[in-house]
Amino acid sequence: MKHYDVVIVGGGIVGSSTAYYLRKNGFTGSIAVIEKDPTYSKACTPLSWGGIRGQFSTPENILLSGFTLRLIRALKQEFGADADISFREQGYLVLASEASVDTLMGNAKLQNSMGVDTVVFDHADLKRNFPYANFDGVAMGSWGRTGEGWFDPYGFLQLVRKGAIAKGAAYIADEVIAIDAGDKVKSVILKLAGKISTGAVVNAAGTSGGAVATLVGFDLPVSAAKRYVYVVDCPAAPEEFRKGPAWFNTDGVYWRPEGRNFLFGFTPSDDEEPQIKDWEMEHHWFEEKIWPSVYERIPACETLKVVSSYVGHYDFNWFDYNGIIGRHPALENFYFGNGFSGHGIQQGPATGNALAELICFGEYRSIDLKAMGVERIAENRPLFEKNIF
Ligand SMILES: Cc1cc2nc3c(=O)[nH]c(=O)nc-3n(C[C@H](O)[C@H](O)[C@H](O)COP(=O)(O)OP(=O)(O)OC[C@H]3O[C@@H](n4cnc5c(N)ncnc54)[C@H](O)[C@@H]3O)c2cc1C
Image 1 (cartoon, rainbow, N blue to C red):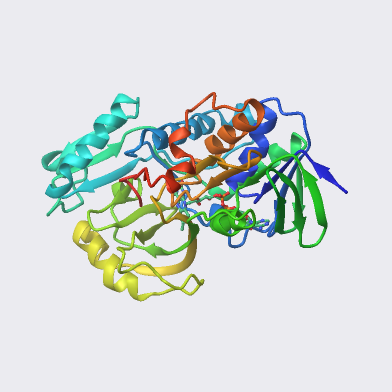
Image 2 (image 1 turned 90 degrees about the horizontal axis):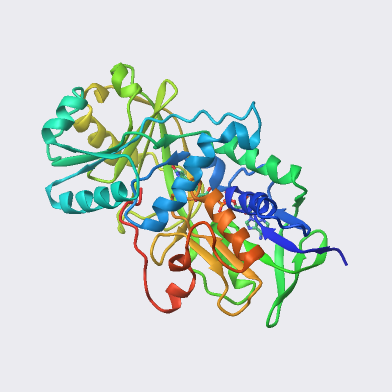
């Protein structure tokens, strides 16, 4: 029977980063990354907006994204002179109504104390800095002056994936359909290749994180959350708007420049959360929710045209909307890297490194992520992130 010392289920940004950082941490054993769809046509990673920010409310999230920011800054040293993911360091502009001012101020204070370059704007500052916008109903805003923006997520995945392959990880096009586990995981069953024995399994299965956890009898509250992305042409958009930040409006609608167009989306309320997890676009949200929001905020966008749109699925953690990282509480050689709920592309590399440290050394060495462990679910200790977009 074929044997791999580590089997990683899923070759998206989390699985590929785990393979890459296992080697960076000195792991010399064999590594298999099992990916059921090597085209990644429905994986989270390529469908992502590719955003990275320091504006989180949870210290662990700030540290996880900070790790990726350092990687992006050192991209050519890490992956070679040709490495380029078109990082647009234009910042996130998060707007708050009067009712949310304390939260925004508290978040910015935490971020600044951890070295994040968040600038707080009052109403007058906002009007001065973004003269093309209307800030009625907005009390304050916070903007990541440096270290925030967006990049090409597919290009980023390909760099990490190729890096992992160059370091000897085997990518196998197959699907993990069963896992043999008693007090430890012993083998996994692949749909095409059958049984392979293993010394450790990492669950990096994105929206299927919950389904893969059930293969070892574990109830992980991670599955798909459907999200809509609209690509919009706004011919009258002022040049500063095109070169400006990603906007997060007070009503959960957000947008950012993308080439000569803009991307639009929104965070659904509980009532609006799509119950059917299919790939069908629903155009009415743009008319009902997004256009009124952007027209009020950016009047020049009165005339706009949706030029294309797509559905993506978040790898959603329905318990507390935050990544679940760490070792299984009972199976010592089964690991989770799941449930990033809209912020996993920017946290994949640090998660991969953290899981690699756990596998290599039995402890975290770069970022202490014990608070993000799966135990918090059984113990009902949610780790809520206030800034979910
Ligand atoms: C529309 C949208 C916008 C987003 N915007 C952002 C953003 O701006 N910033 C940000 O940080 N994050 C964002 N995200 C979230 C981010 O994309 C994800 O959190 C991240 O990509 C998760 O990476 P992953 O490797 O865990 O999952 P994936 O990329 O989905 O990879 C998991 C892989 O596992 C494979 N797989 C599943 N089950 C099995 C199995 N049994 N056997 C073998 N293979 C299996 C799948 O085929 C898949 O390729 C966004 C997501 C979406 C959908």
